[in-house]
Structures are given as C-alpha cells and as structure tokens.
Image 1 (tube, rainbow, N blue to C red):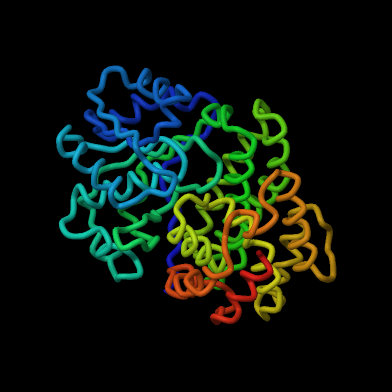
Image 2: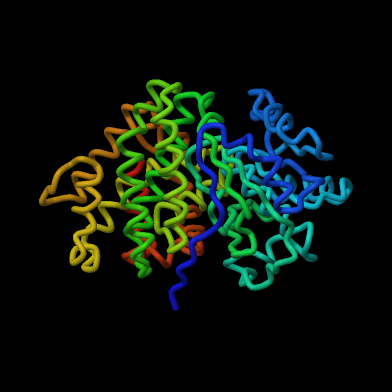
Length: 382
C-alpha cells in the first residue's frame, strides 16, 4: 500500500526566523535543546537564533559532526536530559537536523540506537513519545526539515536510515537569509544534493503522482538557480529558489530514492569525511544512464520530462543527455570530476556494493541493481 502524506507546517520567507519565539509558544516548547555544529556558531547564526528566543531557557549542543554519529547523538541526549528539555531546535544542515532526530529517539526510547533503524525493522518501534522538533535549515540541500527520516552512523560503522512519521519536525522554518553566508563549494554540493533528490525520487518505482509533480518542479528550480547561487551568494532570488528546491526534493522523496543514495550511504559509512551531497552529484550521471532502459520510465517519458525541466529540450536519447549535462554542471561548480579525484579507492568497491545492497534505498530504484550493476556504476563514476 502506498502512503501519501504531506507533510508538516512550513514557514518559508526572508526573515522567517523572527517567528521562532511565537512558534515555540504555539508548540508549548519552553526549554529547548538546540542541536547544531561549531560552524553555525562561528558564523554567528546561532547567536541570531538565540536572540529570537531570549525569553526561553536554552541549552546548546554544537558538536554535530559532518556525518552524524551515534556518539554525538548520545552526548546530545545526555544534555537534553540534564537540561530537562521539552523540545529540540535543529539548526544547521542535514547533519544537525538528522542528529536532532536521533536525539529525539534516544531521549524517549530505551535500547540501542540501531534497533530503531529501518533496515533492522525498527520504524514501528518509534512512537509519539519523541519530543517535538523545530527544524531550521542553514543549507539548501538535504531537505531533512520536511523528511520523516534521518541518516546516522551507528557504533558498528554502518550508515543507517531511521524513518517514522513521529520524527517529522512539527515546524520547518525556512529563512533563505540564513544561507547567504554559505560558501560557493558548499552551496554547490548541497544544491546538487537537492537536485539529486528531485531526480532520483522522480525516477523511483513507487506510485506517487503528487511527489512526482513536486520533484519535477523542484528540479526545474534547482537546475535553473544553482549556478546563480554559487556565483553570487547574495542573490536572494537564487537562495530562495534553492531552498525551495531542497524542500521539494525531500517532500517528494517520501516515495523513495534509489541507487544514488544506496551507494552514497554505503560509501559515507565507510568514510564519514566524504560529503553526502558531493557523492550524490558524482553517482547521479551513471545511475541516470543505468535507469534509462527501464520500461516504466520509458512509457511515462520520465527521462524526456526531466530533460525538459533542465532546459535540454526533448532529446531522443534523454538519459545520455542528462548524464552529460550533470557532469558538465559538476565541473562548472568546481565539484570533483570523479570518485578517484575525491579520494575513493577501487579496492573499496566490494565493501561499497555490499552496503548498497542492504541499504533501504536499494529496493525503490526503478531497475533493481545487481552487484555487477553497482560495480559498473562505480567504474563509470570513478
């Protein structure tokens, strides 16, 4: 049975941060724990948030790593309990928001974190006991602020997905002004993450027409404005459109993703220093080419529809044209040209494939990949 559920309260506008205090009151949050990272603190964004909730008793956890880990979740959970917090404000990119969701699980549920992972059958164990989350993204990429899931590295080194409607933030507060200080390369990597979400979920096998429509519109916005946001970080229109593309990608990927993400999750677990959005950008061209022969995608003209949204017209060989356009875009944005340039080694391929086959995104790819298919994708992405 397909579930179509849209989604949560979203405020998106320049200056939306000013609504934070009243929104906390509306959600009956008086002692929040802010989950963020040191970069957000050093940029002065944390101070801006603190100024908006001056009347509340606030604790801050700012040690979220670039790929959130169980140890970070545990440390933040202990602060949550010590502070007697009654809610969480997740401030930052997808890492901080996902870390906050991990804290919400562990602060209200007993046992090991991995027991709540989707692949371990843990989704049904996550209940409405989780504390309320307000998500404030500072990047335009993951869309975790409107997603029911989190990606966390557990103690055994696996990068696992945790999914429950109870983890959906009660409020997504999107203020494009908070992304204005994002440097060009991070703007590029997070922006390509959003574009990958829109494209991959549009291709995913699950039947969800509303998600397809949202994804296609998000792709058009993201593809049109990503270079403008990278070239001029003060371009308010570009920042707004990229934040919308990011949100739309996550609104759509409730239906599922595919091989791009199963590979990125696996490789990110093997090397947590690798940026998730950059990996998605590198895998996306080869996965598009792998998917292009799927009969359902062909019957629904999905490759042609994506090409049109990207301004490529209606090419006969749309999959090839899209893949080439993505590679060109990655190069123009200054992203690595392949996995080798990004520090990945060929001897890692078998471990990457093993993790990808077990990932929760594997089954929703339009073509069910075999190990040899993943090896071909890795070679073409190398």
